[in-house]
View 1 (tube, helix red, strand yellow):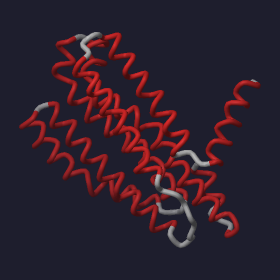
View 2 (view 1 turned 90 degrees about the vertical axis):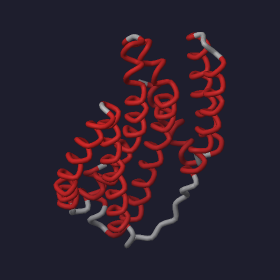
View 3 (view 1 turned 45 degrees about the horizontal axis):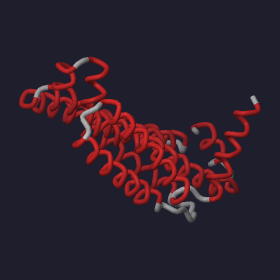
Length: 220
């Protein structure tokens, strides 16, 4: 993305396409990472229990849930961070990291002292959320000189589809103690989410690109 944006932004005729594809990249990362976050939040305890045992999962499930949300935000932040750097303002990211260092260390110490490892994870999540918000605001200001039309309804549609599916597997989780049944419910959520995204979020261009990618992969 970095060489594409820095090269395309240098010519006026490509700026609209660069901005459009930047927003598409954000859209794809959001759509891919959202179900990962939902599964991590709802089934963090079960995943850790299966992986590392009940003693570890009892103490770390909240941490995994916070990390799941943070990973979504961190993945999204890479795109505006790349945009800011490719548009000639990498200094803004460096200044942000310097400005947040002392407050982060203070809140990390404070929350860890009071809430243990859960507090540490919360401090990290707040830092990631702050960075992500700042980078999206800066990227928006740098890109706003080139007006384009982009459909941002994928945000609420994606959250809606994930929310309905997440509520469904949460209800199943409360009534199903069998591990196999829970794995089936997670698989059902992923399938339902994928179908919902295909029919209600992806536009014609998205579907064409995905079909081309699948065709290319099958030909290799």
